[in-house]
Image 1 (cartoon, rainbow, N blue to C red):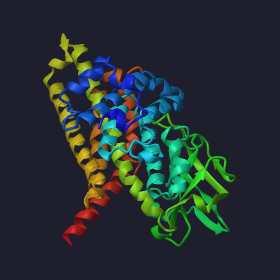
Image 2 (image 1 turned 180 degrees about the vertical axis):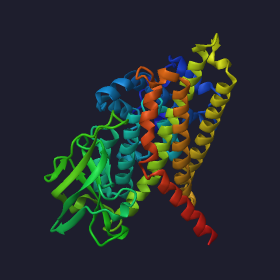
Image 3 (image 1 turned 90 degrees about the vertical axis):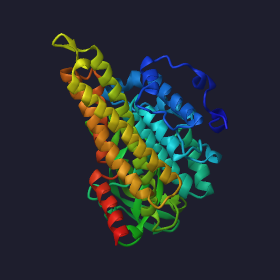
Image 4 (image 1 turned 30 degrees about the vertical axis):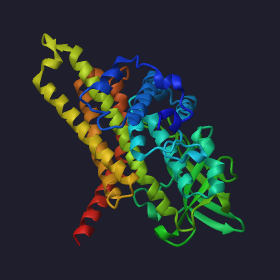
Amino acid sequence: MKLVERMPRVCKAVIKAKVVCALRDTILNSLLAAAHGLSDEQKEFQKMAFDFAAHEMSPHMAEWDEKEIFPVETMRKAAQLGFGGIYVQPEVGGSGLSRLDTSVIFEALSTGCVSTTAYISIHNMCNWMIDTFGNTEQREKFCPELCTMDKFASYCLTEPGSGSDAASLLTTAKLEGDHYILNGSKAFISGGGDTDVYIVMCRTGGKGPKGISCVVVEKDTPGLSFGKKEKKVGWNSQPTRAVILEDCHVPVTNRLGQEGQGFNIAMRGLNGGRINIASCSLGAAHACVQLARDHLLVRKQFGETLSNNQFLQFKLAEMATKLVASRLLLREAALALQESRSDAVSLCSMAKLFVTDECFNICNQALQMHGGYGYLKDYAVQQFVRDIRVHQILEGTNEVMRMIIARSLLSESG
């Protein structure tokens, strides 16, 4: 099936456009193997995303970071290509693509701006949660406008007192007639205050995960407010605020799934979220290997370019090898999730752990190769380092990923 048949909103001119940026040509055809093993259709998705990153995101990345701009119009342009609901079903406006397709797209977009792509990935996760666990009325109400990004979504699980121990969350939802009355607060919410739809995990029952439900809270609902905009090291093109719920009245019809199903919904979302955020790290590392290579070829010290220094040659080789290894693991995890394999949760955790750790190291090494220049904001490498550092913390810390992997191994051996 042709790309335009799968993604009808895609601009044909964009698909057919030649890649005018030599950097993206080099990336796509290099030993970094970004297109290796992909179908022709997936290569088209990838090329389209690389083009969009090069022309619509990369030129603005530094400004969005410095001025803390939430690039709404750029994201809506991305939605016109089908990137607002990549793995949401077509009947509600989504592109209906696979988890592997999604990973390929997010990796490519992140070469243009990690922070913006990371938000798009969270938005996609929320959209998928409504599409997957919502009823027909909920899907038809929320998903079409999320797919076009006329409206934006935020994921609300973490609280000031419950981070890694998410099942201990304290936000309550008491049933009164045909409404839930929500009280509590959520911390570190991407898009908080600027988005329109909030996927909130709240306690409708007793302690533990079985007492948690999932509700959709719409912006301007009485009782919904937001904390101050956080000042962050990276991810500055997306606002982060606390979400505060004070006697917030939410219709029972906005609950996704059944009471007590919320924690399972949250974890199902996060399995895909871990693939998505690791894909964003991969894109950053992809760009940084290229930036480091280009710098070594032009920077001279001791009468010759740094590319002639064997130590730096070996470092660059190690970076490229770890990049390709990360991509292979990530794509295997994406396939496992798509196929609902029994090892999917463990593989998603392994991929998130390995890829975000190794890709941060790749970006950090690329900065080191730039010397003092790498520490200047005129050079993109420092922004990639700042933007992906948080990927080792969110969507489940990498320490929690180790717990999940170990628990799986030990239960199998028992």
